[in-house]
Each structure stands twice: as structure tokens, then as C-alpha cells.
Amino acid sequence: MTLGERIEARLAEKGWSQAELARRIGVQSTSIWKLVTGKSQSSKQLHLIARELETTIDYLTGETNDPKPINLADRRLAYGAPPAETNDTVEVAEIDLRYGLGATYLADVIEAEPRQFSRAWLRHFTDSPPEELFWAKGQGNSMEATIHESDIVLIDRRQQSPRMADLIWAFAFGEIGMIKRLRPMPDGSVKILSDNPAVAAETAHDGELNIIGRVVAVVKRL
Image (cartoon, rainbow, N blue to C red; front, side, top):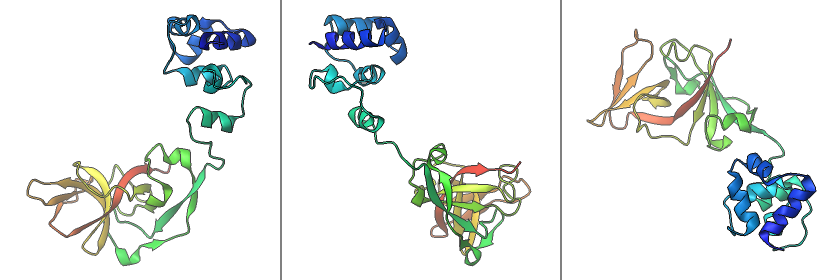
């Protein structure tokens, strides 16, 4: 059987037209028609076609004569996707007591027990693995109205180079931990900026900043 004949056979079993298959995978009907009629021998959407027809690419291309649907885990492997994660929760370390929004002496920063968070939720903010993340609670008002006292911040430790101006970072300035905006300057210094206009900016020079990570999310209490 040709590729087109195998597609037609699966369409007949499901009671679908070529147009219905095209609609389901988001292509023009002519794309399916070309595969069925032999006008085209391959398609970038072949994995989508196999998924919708509940079969495998190997069956459609003639590598196997077994068209039967396969289980979800095997289907993911067949389509080149990673296996499904059976447990969506991961541990992320929490840092307490607190990175200052003002400032807190680093000697007072204590690592608490890890907490469970949804991996899918974390991926809304960063692709870094959980071991590269930690949480901290803000203290003070120098970053208002962006971050308020007791807001939770997610810090990505894999990001440690403030190349883009005015992003928010967790860092040590001398012996003091802070959460502030950083602005690299042409002379090599870095401006330390607060969102609260009542708090004056500071300037760090070579060796004075120790970047902990970038703040990638702020969780507020309602």
C-alpha cells in the first residue's frame, strides 16, 4: 500500500473526509489531497496526520503493516515528543528571612525547607530547571508599586549577567542582599534603581556586585 492508500484506509475507518483531516491538523485540503493522490510523497505534518488517525508514522510510510493505535507513551515516542511527566510537581527551595526591597544583611538570609510547585506553572516564567530556582519574600517598600512587602518573588539563578537595562535582580551589594533594578552604564558601573521614587539610586563599581539571579515572577497576595 502507498502512503495515500494508508491514509485513505484510516480515513475510511474513522468516517472522515480529507477535508475533515485537513481541518483537524490546520492545513489546506489540497495538502491532504496531494498525499492521497501521490502528488506529494512527504509532509512536515505527517506526525500530526498520524496522531489524528490514531496510528504511527511507521505505518503510514510503510515501515510496518500494523495500523493499530498505540498507547499514549508510545505515541509520544513515535512522534518524537518526550514522555509525559507522571508527576507535575517539583521542589523549589525557599529563602527566608528576606531579600530586602530595602536591604537585608546576608547573614540573616536562611534557607527554609523546599516546597512543592507545579512544573507547568513554573514554565510560564522560566525554562530553567527547579534546582536553579528559589523563592524569596520581599521586605520593605523601595520597590513599590512593582513589589510590595511580603510579595513572593521567583529568582532564576541561571541568569546572572545583567546585560539588559532595568530588569529586576536579586544580588549582594557588599554584604547586603537586595532586590532592585540594575542598569549597566557605559563606564562599566551599574546603577542600582528602586521603583519607589523616594529612594535614591546607588552606583556599584567593579567587584561590588554579586548577582544571585534574575527575578522572573512576582506573586502578589490579594
